[in-house]
Image 1 (cartoon, helix red, strand yellow):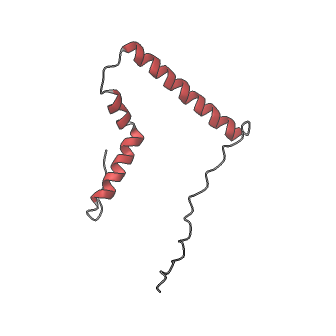
Image 2 (cartoon, one colour):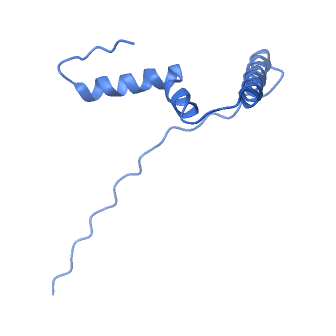
Image 3 (tube, rainbow, N blue to C red):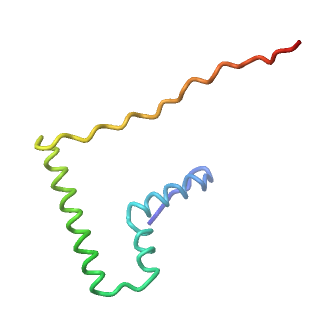
Length: 91
């Protein structure tokens, strides 16, 4: 896995690296390998993962074909305008 560091900006390169590792599933695999997983448990987990992926693919296909309604889109976060400054009363 390669990440280019531009203008000595290491923070940005680390963010890119973490995002690539997340996409590849490295963190998930590291978490699974922390403890031993019996072969029977591994088979059931892989089978359930395959079923989950197939359902997700079928759901997306049905949405594309118009058989299911598309989920509502999230509204982008809008910042509220700052509150007006209150002047302190001097007597």
